[in-house]
Image 1 (tube, helix red, strand yellow):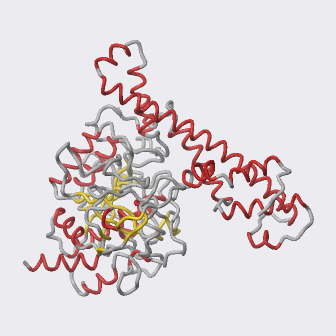
Image 2 (tube, helix red, strand yellow; image 1 turned 90 degrees about the horizontal axis):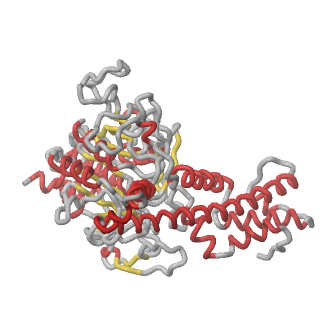
Length: 551
């Protein structure tokens, strides 16, 4: 494709489009909030419920499991979803939302004396007593930078540097990472703005030529003119479309960069002004409000649908667990969740009857990890299973951080934890493992469907998203299914069953996820990427649970 670079804005845009260094490292891999799917063809609808043998699709065999369980009794299982919030009025979820029967809605009284007023469907740990929700928060990296900077750049710095060498070394590391990320984000935003300006200018030229406010790619293909300016604009937009840069993506990108610069990487932003708690008091529990939807419930609603969207109403999708009630615990903002909130969310879920907790979130730093560890151990003591997303950084988390974690001390790992990576619907080597998914032979327990997963989103809508955030609830759904039909199973037994019943792909070699977009894919055995070496499967899990129940 040749385009004369007479307009300097076009020149800049095309230079960025055609430069793998400038472009791949900034826009495509960075700003798109939903992880891009790595398959070449659209996934079949509802594929995560399908069966590898019967359907030749690498789902979790939900329908086959229910055929096996036909006419069996089941018990309702409460599943807590610690996330960004859930649209509890969604048509496919409203009948599946947990209700605290001991609480009288709206009377302003803590009727059940659990410390939370009017917690009818769960609790929001990132909201103020005045009802306001926290929409954004800083990254943990930013918070650490602020805390350590105050300590090591003040008058006491020289003495502290000698006295606290370890913490000072951490500060130097954090400072370097923070300043690098801030600088890179500003540079990426500058590049993005140039692309966006070029796109908007080109769109305006095309709209004027067509004499309409909107146009399609087909409209662009059909343009025939000798006007060089229109042809340049036409070809530029087509080139951007080939790189998946559309008007919607530019809008998402603008929101992404503004969020990072205004909130995530802003040392002066403090979300706790809204919450009104003491962030340093890790024992504080009774803060927040009962707004379980919050300011942006897309992520949590999508997660909830995978777990338990209504299977009998003939609309939308079918979740995995058929007899489940979803408890909403809001603790994850746009930014990094805080250790204090995660710990309290776990305590709340356990104390209010959850048997499984889904945690589709994670971060690289955890300054108050001990508080989360205590909550994790508390869940273990109460027999509650924790399912956690492995993360979307294409890293080996045997060697990289992804908090929270099942490792609660230097030598101890809890047995009520499942760490989940993301797989795709086809067992083609090139795309079977999500190219974004974290992995780890010693850390990631299983893989589960996490690419192009169609599920519920707010306002009666449905969308396909990708991420280990989707793989975790697929595993949570299977866990809840097991507990529903085999209620005497312990959390450790459920974990053991899921691990042992994964579908192995013997001799399958796959592209190992890679952080660099331009890196040549390394081909490795699939079973080298997780502890179990397999993909979660509900049918095989219930068969194994049945043999245990007979003993």
